Image (cartoon, rainbow, N blue to C red; front, side):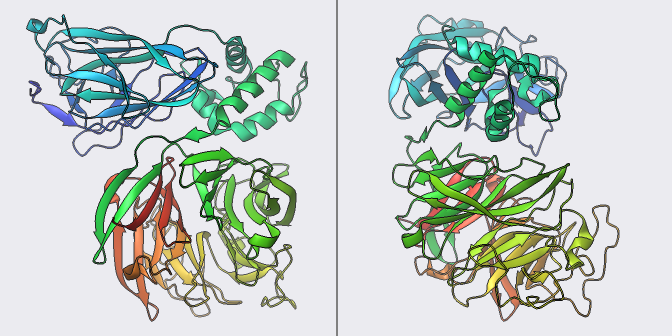
Length: 631
């Protein structure tokens, strides 16, 4: 049955990670600036409800008045959690087979009862709604019996599926729509409030934290998604507290009791550190590149803001999250486990936990390297590097082995990429911290590529080892290198760095050379004004550059025979371009470029090649993908 409202505005609705609060956003639409906001009643029970992945091409219909369904006049199209928004207004049209996934952490040791309430236009006679948990296993259907369809599309029917049993632990619950529905109201809620610890934690955060940290609240309800995202620094801030807490430079005027402190810490730890079980079927996309039939598998969602990845010899994946966590991803089970014992990363602007790498002799020494933003005190931050030993479950013997000289209060351009060379030495990129002339000054490490020993000392073959600059510096004149890779086919170190407005680059790093920034650049200031010439004697030209910017991030020089037509390509994630970029460079010249997955609109942060030649990449929004030859 077709939706009778023909003046429809196309939009795609994704429900951003949210917990216990109304929270939503819609991506840009080619035909409308309106966004769809879905409201969920705050849930205060022993369960985290996080709605994600509304895989629906929702058509936002016009109401009888000829205006879109913006009941609150805030520029957002509203799907309400209570009552009709009036005017006979059709809000969201779902198509056959679309679904909405909930990630529910049931903190009870027993199954908990939930209700699903769906409010649709009475003209949706051919539709139904089912509940699946895990996805593919139907546990209930919203019944349509008794509905009065004679009322037509301008009136609403409320359907309820009561007493849905959700087991303990983390569960994925899918609400699946069959047939088209004119959707007005979707509400998924637990039946009772039974967790006094959570209640105590919420009240303390609202009273003592929300005033200064408004992002922790959404309409006076604790936004646990924001608390969880900032779990590491948030936890440390509470740990720094004593009860009663006097005002201090650390805690300000925060006042919480010891019971409240313990409740917050317990709840953050329980939610933020719970392993994420991925039990849904793998979503696969088949595509063609360079004459090869390939497939891309969505291996995980909700994996966090992954900044760095490294494969272990057993084929499993260590991931470092900007928020400070390090997780071990089991490739076969598709499960993630938090690994304890990593460094404390400062959350400051673009700063956080950055890259992760293993030693060249990992099988024997089990050594891991991690880069991160370091708080030096006094409002000053820089980039640092630590090592630790990984026993398969946690990090031990954590040691900070290098701290970059040069700091600022600014929150941009930390660099932070790590490459471990075959001789065990370490390459580390450092951004110029948005103070551009740092790049040309050899008395600091900012805007440089560094070459270190595994202990963090200057490599003995460095160009300034005997003077003329800091001994750790290998090259300079860099802006913000967020891609760094060893070309296994040539032994070279390649770097990808952000320009300003245009001027993103790929360079082959050479000892002692000046790569130009800001004396020479192919970009301009963000207002379009002049920075410097594109070519300047005494500075190096990039292998290739981009105008306008694509914002290159993670970089790999593909070296496997598993996908032979990709061998030798520079493969990089892009943040502004929002695609996977494949560049072929021959004899110092870019000869071809391919941009994959533009339709996804994802900020691709990191790219890594698996031991078997599969290519993996991670998006800022939490998706983890694998590319391989199609089966």
